[in-house]
Amino acid sequence: MGWTPGEGDDWRKDRTRAQQRAQQLRRDQTSSEKALWRILRDLKHEGAHFRRQCHVGDFVYDFAALSQRLLIELDGAVHDDPEVQAQDALKTSSAEARGFRVLRLTNAEVSYTEHVLERVREHLLPPTPNPSPKGEGK
Image 1 (cartoon, rainbow, N blue to C red):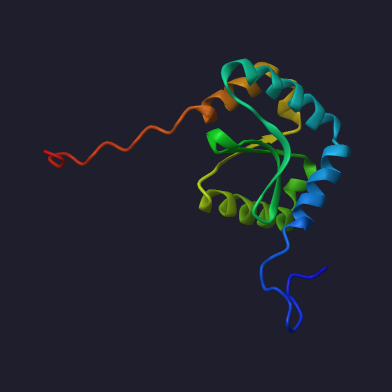
Image 2 (cartoon, rainbow, N blue to C red; image 1 turned 90 degrees about the horizontal axis):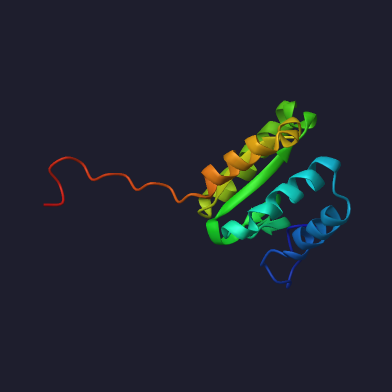
């Protein structure tokens, strides 16, 4: 299934590929993803509702709090590879172009529950608005 349709075919992108990938990743979670999922579920009583393996556009993100416009990516050792880092940068810029913030955590960080909770809570807060330049807005 390619991205370029044949002659006479519909030119819209087929999003089912991202949906299928998300379903597969939900079934095949890593131990770090399972641990982070348990941590994120504890935030539900604080009003944060996370989804696992959520696709936004053409990419699948590990966790998403859609109403807070926050995506969380869990990075293992493979993310030290320059090619993977380039793909990660593309994925992050795609999310930011859609108005999302992206929080990247390492697998090693997940074992520090309080640290992870603190970082996630920081990103769940709405960004503070930029103050108007001095002298304007009067």
